[in-house]
Each structure stands twice: as structure tokens, then as C-alpha cells.
Amino acid sequence: MKFPHFVRRLHLYLGLALLSWVAVYGVSSAVFAHPAWFDGFYQDGKPLWTARFDRTYDLPIPPGANLRDVGARIVADSGLSGSFGANRPNEYQVNVYVFTFWSATQIRYMVKEKRLIAEDRRFRWDHFLTGMHARGGFDQPSLLSKLWGAVVDVVCIGFLLWIASGLYMWWQLRSCRKWGWVALGGGFALFAVFLARL
Image (tube, rainbow, N blue to C red; front, side, top):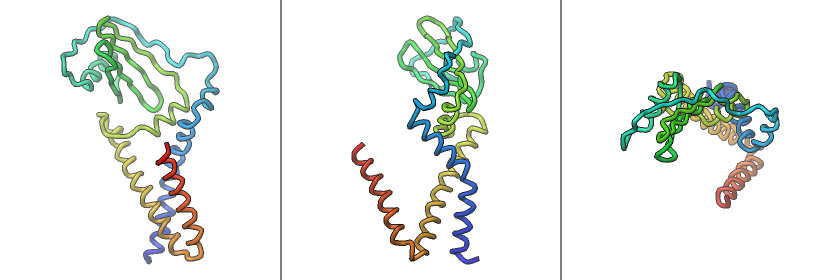
């Protein structure tokens, strides 16, 4: 197999392997860009959040405490498990968000009131898609979460190889070089305008 033949095969099979990822990122980008379009599907009067529990809770948080450890303790004490993020908007409140692709629960620990409030989010396809688009990294403890992060890394490398093989094939077709330069230059010029002006 000669190198040009290998590049064509690489481009072909990368396109097939990356198809589901390109589709997910493409569709979810539309959700990010036009959230109002999707809100219309859920105007049925049902609340986005429903109460799971509201109870007394006392967790001393020493100065300088690791917020992720605090969040893990709150998640465990709430009887939940899975991926989560924690933030502290002020000294009197800790928010913990527990999530999967299909479900999400937000927990608020009101430090001064010694109160723990949890609510479950209603499933929505737009939230599902944006969650898939934005999820990544290796900060979650589960093996599958780390594997997802590793696969996303591989997909990113696949995108770069797909681009490189496409450029190579374009350059080999002398009759297409002129319009290829127009397409390539136009794309970069438009990107540069947005980058400079937004």
C-alpha cells in the first residue's frame, strides 16, 4: 500500500469512526446557540426541579477545607453517588451538583441554617446533549468517567488526523487547488474576523 492510498483509507475510516462524535458535537452546538428553540418543547407547566428532600444537617467545614472533599461527604450523606461538582458562592452555602448523562440532582447545604436541600432535575433532551458536549476531564473518581475523558482525547487526535489527511488529499488533486485555497482562506478569514471583533 502506497502512502497516498494509506491516507485515503485513514481519512475514510476516521470519518466513519468519528461520525457519532461529530454528530453529537454538531447537534449540541445548535442547542447552545438556540436554547429558546428547545425551551418551547417543555412549556407544559411541569417544573424543571422537584424536591428530593429538605432536612437538618450539620457538617462543620474548617477554614481552608478542600471543597471537593466537602462535596464528596455531602453526596455520600445524601445517599447519592456518581460524578459531581461543588462550589461555594459564599461562606453560608455550599452547592453540590451530582450528574449523569440522564439525570442530575442539585444539593444546597445552608451552613448557617444547618439545612440540606436536594432537588432532582427533570430529564430534557437539550440538557442531555449539552451535557455530552461539555463533559470531559479526569477529575471524577469512576473508571468510566476517566475512560470517557481518555476517549475524548483520542477523538480530538482523530479530528486532527482527519484534517491533516483531508489537506493532504486536497493537495494531491492539482485541479482542486485553486478552489481549495478559496475555501481554506475564506474559512480562516472568517474565523480571524470573529476572533478580532468579538
